[in-house]
Image (tube, rainbow, N blue to C red; front, top):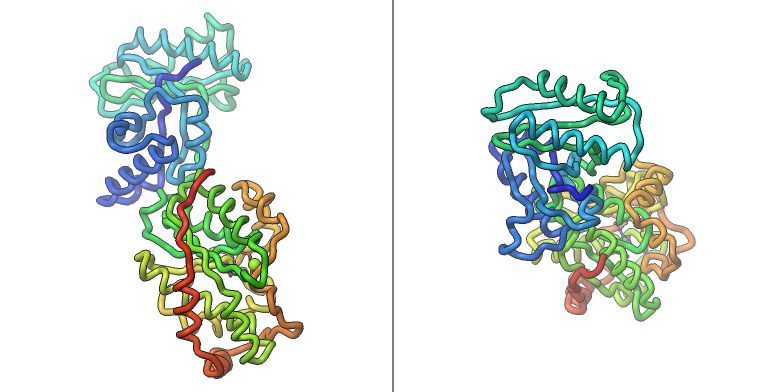
Length: 391
Ligand code: ATP
Ligand code: MG
């Protein structure tokens, strides 16, 4: 069956009262972007009708695309009928017959709903009329409690949407509705997942990566480029920043006590990220930290590093353990990429004896041993802003 359109429903957005329109518009825009429909002339393709969106004459693959657009609660391929009982019955039979070919079933239920329509028969009458037709013509049994196929009929205004399948979407809020964030992205497993979690809550990410070149090879940068591309289907579209940190790390290594090195690198990262946030007009910094995962992520060290932050530092994975994070990484399609080998800037000059309980005061004192501002400025001056491509 070639559907007339895909009918997209959202749920959480419905709760947003007066902001609802903003959210609906964002979802419409994001669906359009995900479907690869550029600019205004194509605006007709994703239509916003109150309470739902329609993707008109969807291309093959459009259904799959919708399952990665945050804000989508579910999406159904539908045939459209006029709001007329005979018409609805005819189209419903067609959809039910196609449904039996796609995924054979014995038992079914019909669930009709009406809203803002002059169509007179009650939903119950529609259910019974259509149900009887499917039962007799297709030789199926009605099961209201546990149907193998549910035929949904939504009658809205002068139209009825008829569908036999409904695909669950990712839920959440449309990317962009919660504002912009700078996400610190290494080439590891956790940070892409952290980025995805924030996007699910409507944040629009500007990824920032620090690499150790010329002391490392460019492998981490290449991986991040691909990770950023892998997040495009989920709605990440902004340019990402690639920042050389190796020289600064060497300076820190020469000047500061070795157990504090990793924490001091982290402070540099935060400071640079805040400057980028200012330029990108982002309101928070996101990291993939998880409490206690490594020495730099003890409560004391998170506090000691974060003490210099002026923007909120959001850590969506703080209470997730590695098994959960890996499961998410697999589900969103970043795991295989993340586990490819790379040379990481943090393991460059990595101390043998990392501090597990530092303090802000201790890091402040270490930072007097080198010129923090100059290192930040120098890294920023050599940072490159790259477009996100592929996906
Ligand atoms: P990940 O899998 O995200 O690398 P991790 O468990 O290896 O996480 P750390 O290396 O301690 O954790 O880093 C903690 C967080 O700091 C990362 O999740 C990321 O947000 C940030 N970070 C670490 N290294 C980099 C880097 N090279 N560039 C950008 N951000 C980084
Ligand atoms: Mg890492």
